[in-house]
Image (cartoon, rainbow, N blue to C red; front, side):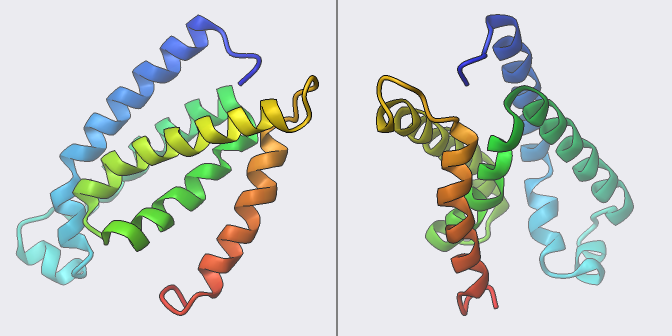
Amino acid sequence: MSGASWPAVALLAMSTAIGTFLALRQARSLNALMLGETEAYGLGVDIRKLKIAVIAVDVLLVAVATCFTGIIAFVGLIVPHLLRLLRGSDNRYLLAGGALLGAIVLTAADIAARLLLRPAELPIGILTSAVGAPVFVALLRSRRYG
């Protein structure tokens, strides 16, 4: 976050907006796919095209985000699971809510990283990993995900 520049922010914002828009267009099909491939096909979803589209959008979003932010993209592993616990598995809410909650968590982590070792700044990747790893392990060990 400390090495951010306006051109990088603009490129990241543009790719995120495009990727989020494309992902939201597939939300209903993804909800149908949660029923199973046979049921989704019966509902008119082209499974092959959906998988290719979702993978392409995911690769775009993850590649650009990781290119500019590094390992703090680890937040992206935890936020969707927290949202599922809070809101359920409806992809219409998970896609938009994931972007919003991810931004909130990352902003809080950045503020904490700047304040914990004042006047020095703790690298945000260390903070997100130190907090995120135990949360991720707890989520994996919980009965809901086991």
